[in-house]
Length: 521
Image (tube, rainbow, N blue to C red):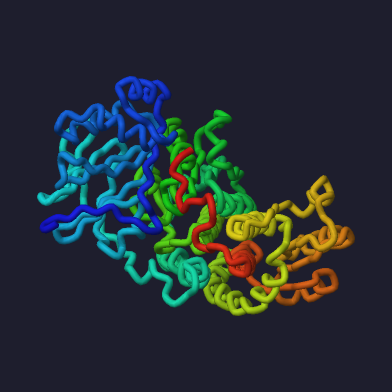
């Protein structure tokens, strides 16, 4: 094909075609003669377009969109219009790429990087037509829309393995630089140039709600602990998929923070829209520039992690933590809740974090050896107190999602309230102990599970060598301010999950049944 070429980009980010349709629509199409060969909603869309087609696919697609319910991202080729590629979206990501007379569509930016870094972000219920004449965008009424072309700063090399066996391992090693990119630019400028709300608003805050899913939710739990402790603002970390259904009580002088790597997580986006409807100021902590949450939130903190290809997120989590560190520290300074010299101490520790993450990565060979010994484990439990509990949740999630080993995380003090009954001889229990004021209590909890036959892996800071009296295997991380220890303690847990998965011969980057971005509820 000469001139503008239209292509559907495949690979790590296949276009997701999802639609939730009324059962009545399917029955109606069957009555018109449609022969279904599957139960998928995707096939319903194809039959619907075929039934409605009147010689003009754009007009047909507009009519069809009026009959569709829920979320979808569509890429459509028509035999009668061979020179055109049509696409449309609603509540699911779809990006149009452009390059010197060529056009591409994909669900997210990394899939496009080998072709172009110039993209157009479609809005809900918009249609794009790609052909030899160029790229045209229309709204749900057929009116022409003018969208700017956005240039993505990511380069192709950042989306390649770069000599690593897997994207996940590469992205684990990119965490020092990712954390630096999130924190350093904001530490070097006055807070009014990056803080997502004005200082006077921060002083009036009565409550903060952090809503997210999966790994981002675990970052939110960290934010809950740290902001409350440093800035003395009540904080609630809520699971996005549950938040709306409880009809949350939302009042004045509250702040809603949505955390999402992709900026397209359906449940998180829906929660953000609910809060906007109720007049609450919203902030998005996202990685992908131009994503739905970034566009719709009142203010956005970009994490600048760069493209993350592996389904199991690592560096995006580190940058979300860094964003929460920044908010907790600045809110505390603005509100005057820090002791003399504490702010300067926190900033110094933030600046030193990337180097300390690098030092933590240097212990990977020992973790690889240990992982080979427990690759056949049936169960694993991760325990901690306070901020260590927040990282236990993330460590357990990483372990289960790529090793397929049953894993749970518990607040260490809760083990004796039921979960300890699951411990038997050889059960792997990972104890995280980086919080000085909770160290002895956590050791006591580890002794309790050891007495039931558990094999203990201990994770603590250098200097806490007494833990070796209890743990069978110990990993040490550099000392930092306890509020920021999560960035260091998560590294060995990511590596443990990675090496167990490798030892089992599993697909590390594409674990079964999982997707990088969850764009349906």
